[in-house]
Length: 84
Picture 1 (cartoon, helix red, strand yellow):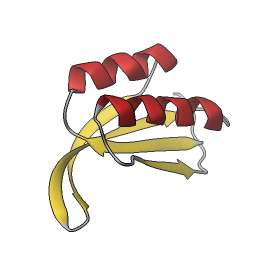
Picture 2 (picture 1 turned 120 degrees about the horizontal axis):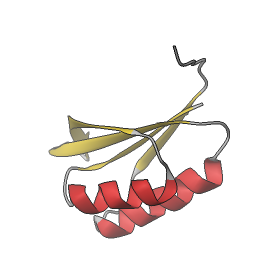
Picture 3 (picture 1 turned 45 degrees about the vertical axis):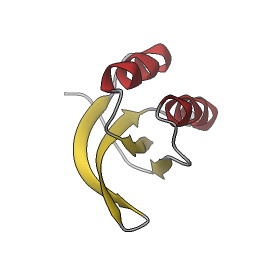
């Protein structure tokens, strides 16, 4: 599975620390997002792992609290991956 968490681009050091508490590997990139028609700088966190819904939800709750947000978005995308 590919999991994505979308959040505001603030407190990046704290966000990286939170993600590292839960996962040894992840990808983080910056994007321009829109929430309620307002542009905001966003961070997108991608994690590839098998069926870790509870862990992802716990991380998203931590991020939501750290950034004082009403909500963060989680995507769960079925995919195929392998290391070469």
